[in-house]
Amino acid sequence: MPRTTRRRVAATALACAAALVAVPQASADSISYIKDGNVWLSTPDGARQVQVTTGGGYTYASQADDGTLVALVGQRLQKLSRSGQVLADFATPVTDPRTDGKQFFGPFDPVVSPDGTRVAYGYYYQAYEFDPTCNYPVGCIREQLHVGTGLTASDRITSWDEPGWAHQTGWQHPAWIDNGTLMLSEPGADFSSAINSASVLALTSGLTRTTWLLRATMATGVKSLIGL
Image 1 (cartoon, rainbow, N blue to C red):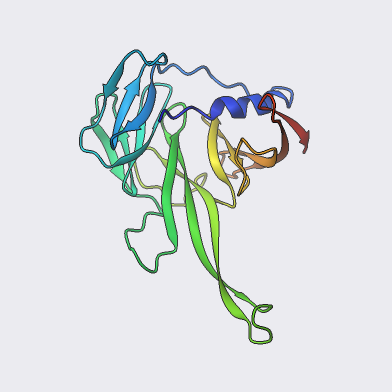
Image 2: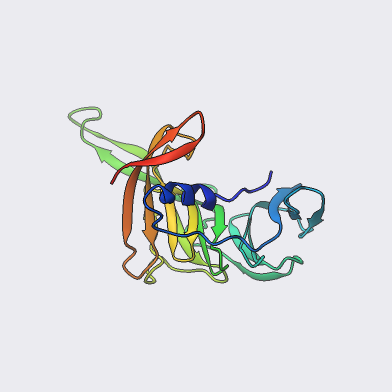
């Protein structure tokens, strides 16, 4: 299934806020997608398809404006050329090959920035928290599944301790607005939801973030900002 860019949706929402951010026009003349476990490219009109990888095992692919590809294979990320050459193969802080007892699950749905240097990806975190109201007065341990978005360079594993690369627990569905700005959605809501909040994250060393509440017009799919 073709991976349509969420950046256009993000740009529409921001345009309603007095056009705070301008989104560059994509220069890549193809769409990346997964077919039979491999990365493929297609012309926008679907008239021509080209198979990029042959090894199989791929589950997601994203393309930068310059044509650089980032794909998910197993629990690792690969940076690929348009000819299928593996330029980098690396794990993330949430990569955990264990089948039992692990706390992190991911990465999921990696999306590469327009310039091909950064990747945002989703993850789940399994937490075990004490609830004093459960089985009162003894209490109990509850399992809580949290979502989040991680950031990494597109060619190496990147620690969350590095300035400008901290993860964002509680936010998901990353969409690049430009090379230094990322749009995130609240847990349990997607861009198809009637009302949800969205966070715009400026990727500076301080990771500044602004949160908006968005309302969707279900008939047209257009969102408008209704609160800051």
